[in-house]
Length: 98
Image 1: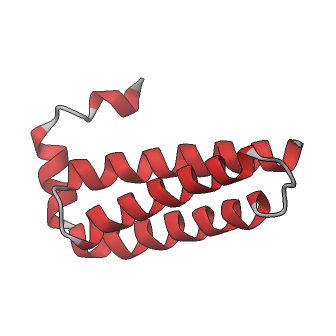
Image 2: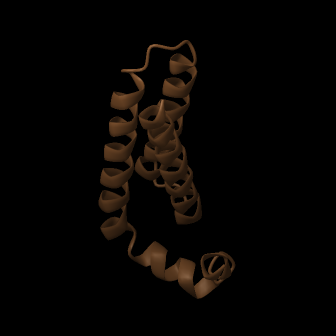
Image 3: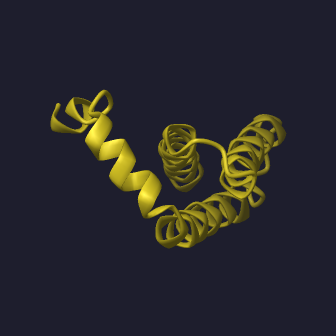
């Protein structure tokens, strides 16, 4: 619950916005690598839902990358990063279990 405590803290978001150009390359690299690893394992599945899961992971990863590259507010970028990590990790676990 400590993570949620920062969502309305204006000083925290000002600090994150100040460090934008240091954080963006790190966030972009992590989410792109994790998304591509998930897509690699999903593409090896031989089931019909493979396309749906592959499209979901690719769309969320590209959306998060697009928000970061378009210099959207850092709240959006961080939200997209978290959504991308959750989606890619869930899909990767699903692909490895099946």
